[in-house]
Image (cartoon, rainbow, N blue to C red; front, top):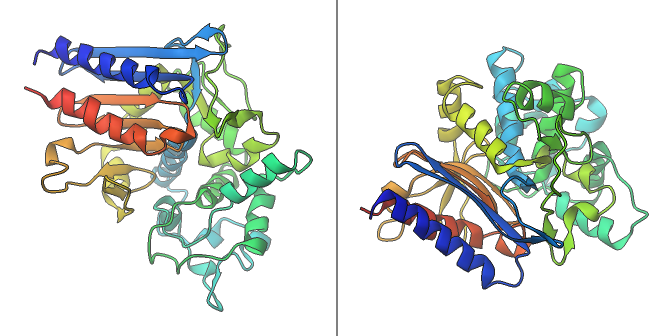
Length: 359
C-alpha cells in the first residue's frame, strides 16, 4: 500500500467511525509521519451548529498528565528533586497526616514521587467520587487541596505503596502540589512558563485557570461524559488540575510530544526512564505497561505484534497522544466522549497503526 493510500484509508475509517455513532458529537485526528510523508489533520461532526474544524482547541482529559510528569522530569534535571524522594519532603505535615493508612498501618511517609508518577502509591481516586457530587449538588464546592483531605476522610487506600498499579488522579494532584512547592508559584503558571511559552503553544491554556496567549475564533470542541459537557460542571477544574487540565489544538499537542521525543524539553535519557521504568497496568482487550504517565502497548503473541509498539498518553473521553517508533508517526486525536474511553485505543491500534504498517 502506498503512503498516500494509507493516509486516505485512515481518513475514511475515521470519518466512517464518527458518522455511524450518534454518541460522538465531534471528533478529531492528527497523524504525522515525515518518514512516510503522511500529514493528516482532520475533523468530523459539529460543535453545536459549527462544523468541526481541525484548528479547534480540545480538552484532552488525562493526556494532560504527561505534561505534569514532564514538569516533574524538568525539575529532576534541574536537581530540585529526585524521583525516589519521599513526597513528605515537599508536602506539608497537615496534608501528609494520615494520607495513606492501609490495614491499620500508616504508609504516608513511604510514598515516593516515582510511585505517584507510576500510579503505584496505593491511594484511592477522589476524582470520580467528587465528580458525581459536583453533578448532583451544584452548590458543592471544593479546592484541589480540599479534595485530597476529602479522600483521606471518605476513601481507603487500595494497596501498600509500590504494591500494584491503581490509576488515580489523586497521585497527580499531589504531583501538582509538589511542583507548586518547589517553584513557589501555581501549577498552571509553571505549565505556561516551562512548556506552553517555550514551545510556542500560543492557543494552549489550563481549563478554569488561564487564558491562551492567542484567543481562537473557533469554539472549543467540548468534552462529553454521559450526555453533558464535562466543563459545564461548576468547580470541575479543581478536581481536574494537574490530572488533566490542558486545552489546545491537536497541532500544539503535536508540538509538545515532538519536542519531548526529540530531546528539546528534557534529555533523551530522562525520557527513556519515563518510558521504561514501568509497571503492568492491564486493560480490556489490549495490554499496557505504564511508566511516568506513559502508556505502552505490550506485545501479545498472535494479537499485538512487536511492530505495534508505541508510547503516549490516554484521556478517558476517547483522547490519545502517541508516538509509533516503527513508522516515526505521531498519532493524536479525540472522540470527545466518555463512551470511547477504551474504544478509541482500539481504533488507533486497528485502524491507524495497522494501516501505517501495511506494505
